[in-house]
Length: 493
Image (cartoon, rainbow, N blue to C red; front, side, top):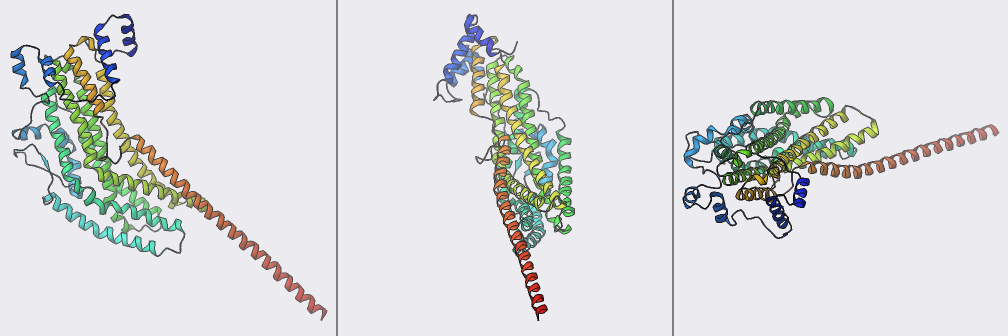
């Protein structure tokens, strides 16, 4: 039977000396924690661990040595089986097809009868990629036309106030992701295909080891809803700018619909994957008792450990595959939000709240919401896959299992510590709540500096206006005095 053992219980057991196994385990862990240079090596003493798992019986050792500690091997003949149990692809297929139609990520699925383990592929001359070239080229026509007009207005507005020029900068920055799509998204197509194949292999491996498939409840309807919502939100945000911004013409909106929908789609993709990671980790943790109750619990636990490490590697692969796209995503959000906030606050200081400022606040709210969703979902996924699974293992009653299984529990905990499930953009930054707060901090710093310049300009304008008024008053008085003197001279004559 498994139950939670608190740290207080451990200390009491140490003092009373009632549980020699627990004392030995705690001492061993404490000694290893004090070894600063100790490193985890999953292949260390592999023969000894196998002997402990399978016992000293030579026949049993011979029978189970052929078992792969990494789980059942997946071969090319398992192609149809991989498709059959790839519930993640089946439930999220709508978003994949939407990305293909929009030309965002032209990856393709191989035919069901294909004898290969690579069920998702990417090719620069595939049908999906050629379609992406066509769609991107057609979109470039309207985007370039709108961008040139915005740039012309920016160049011809040198005599205007900076606050009026800044609106062109905001909408020019939103056009940037379209031109960077081939570099940021298509170039990483092979990495995205690897990520998709990792999901496909993981689900079949999970089924063979645990005996139960991974079930993603409501993910099918959620994905469809997010596809529709992405475009609906795009129309809402863009059209709101047309009605709230004076210089945002209706035909300009056609250059922004697909860009905003693309940003929404990437946010939806991140949300879906983070929820899938959490679901897979929860299922693995729930089935943990099966490993401990199996005939050879140490072997089963070792296979569960490799399943967990694969899940952690998938989380890292997600960030690696979309590193450039989400990196540009975060920079555009940061820049657009900062400039929009500055423009809105300066206009409020000078003229009060108007429809134009409301339009800028819509942009700020939209950008910050996207950033919060990405950071928050990454935080929850890392916590559920890492910390909560760690808690499950720490709740195992070590006194109720044999020595080899105790060793595997310890190895499992070390594997979690050495392979933290972090959502990282290929080394550029970690996606978590700290990134969100850091962005707010940086934006606040830049806003304070910009507002200081603005207040200085306002004070200088006020001084100039005051000097003009004083000069006008003195000029008027001087003129009146001269007129009076002329009248006196006329009277004397």
